[in-house]
Amino acid sequence: MQAVAGWKAGPQINRKPGGSPLARREAREGYLFISPWLAGFVVFYAGPMVASFVLGVTSWNLLNPARWVGLDNFRQLIHDPLFWRALQVTAVYAVVAVPLDLLAALLLAALLNQKVRGIGAYRTIFYLPTILPGVVTAVVWRWVFNPEIGIINNILALLRLPGPLWLASPSWALPAMIIMSLWTIGTATVIFLGGLQGVPVELHEAADIDGAGPWSRFWRITVPLVSPSIFFNLITGMIGAFQVFTLPYIMTQGGPQNATLFYVLYLYENAFTYMKMGYASAMAWILFLIIVILTLVQFRISRRWVYYAGGDRV
Amino acid sequence: MSTAVGTRTRHAPFWVRARKDLPAVAAQIVLLAGSLVVLAPVAWMISMSLKDVNHLFDFPPQWVPDPVRWENYVRALTAMPFGRYFLNTIYVTVMSGLGSVGSSLVISYGFARLRFPGRDQLFLLVIATMMLPYQVTMIPSFILFRYLGWVDTFLPLFVPFFFGRPFFIFLLRQFFLSIPKELDEAARIDGCSSLGILVRVLLPQVKPALAALAILSFMWAWDDFMHPLIYINSSEKWTLTLALNGFQSPLDPGQPVIHLMMAASVVVAIPPVVVFFLAQRFFIEGVVISGIKG
Image 1 (cartoon, chains in turn purple, red):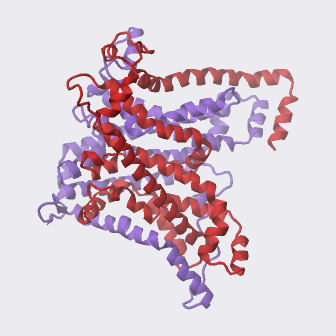
Image 2: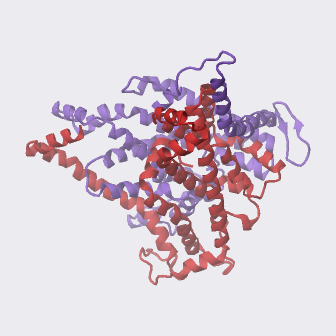
Image 3: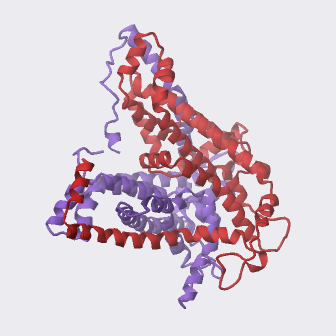
């Protein structure tokens, strides 16, 4: 991310019209080289964003002509209990799963940063679930949570504990997904590991000599020094949480009783099951606003707790 | 610097070393226990895939199947036309990889090496689109592709990547900036064109980065579920993820198929796992820079 700080590639360009023939040729070539991106930007980003905004104020099922409805879609959304349910499910997931996964990933990275025999094998093992295609993960975990033959309830049975119905229970389905998210913390862990390897050993040794235990060294030295990685994982984790789709689609189809109706799942259903393109576009815009606001707020708050050793900020 | 630290530790008195070893032992134990927990679902998936249909629901469950039914794999892969699904997936994966890496290489060269008005502002736009959630453009893109008559073809799954992948452009540009510009200038004096510089001078230098991006692209395309779900209707055009989602065995209606599903899941998971093991170094590097999966 510090790379983003240096986003200017070189000296500022002389913007006087004309310039030398050589400079004009270079500029022509520059536009030529980036032209695929320019075209793609217009067709796949800028155009769709404008279109999405226009669609948001229409009612359209792809068959009949689109009809201008003003802010009706948004008014309907406010009175749509499923919309609020979807927001609630996603928010709970983001607020619980993201910090939980971050904490687990940070502790795991700290462990993987020790000089332990077979550390390479451990790193591979903990990363393995992240490699598996999401659909495979969903298919397997649907059965891991199976109340009768799944692993979890079998282990609970060995301990003579009653196992919940997990994905079949309205109150346990979302917690099940949160537990499951702990399985795929590989990416966050690798990023933390990179951050941890940048923490100078001397700092730990000095604190050790001053009598700081491992716990306080972890919280007072390691955590502040890897705070840029924490911040990065927090942002990507939050954005990821608002985009959860494959797992609920395959594991629960949003059920039972809409207990796992994630936001994007409901958006997808509106667009491609009920063909309510306008309604779904309005939802997409709200999602976009939520993500932008959350990200901006995070950046704001980050000034208070993220520490950049080089003094540069994003 | 690291050697200096190592030497100091080696000459430290034994009690300092003993105290240093304690966290390592604790870490070893926790990591071992954690590995077992993490591997359990994978082991269970493989175990289920080899079970006899009559032992699927045994209690307590056997972790080592007896008898071992290798033929589950044959039955799973012939229950549906998996050969076709593999070819479909490989086609989409290869095209996305070629498109995104090739176009991003050219585009990022323009952003890194050529000077033109508005360049830095446009590059900020690249960064902005990198953060844009796909769902915001999903519906208009669908309408666009529908208008083009591309629904139920593979085109929507890879054509957009031929226009550069923002994240790849960003990464390659940063990579180019780390290469001394004197190299280009020397070649330019020798009469090399911009394209010639890119191909002959810079390409050899960025090969490792391109490999990392190709692997990332493979992983994402193989993993992709939402795009095929939206765009592909006919079952002969399914990708592997769609096939797993729609898995059913026409051979024994009403019979449990979980063992066959697990066998199919194992097969679908093998290519990314193999690529990961072969290219672990590249892949981990790529992820460190990206921090994004899927």
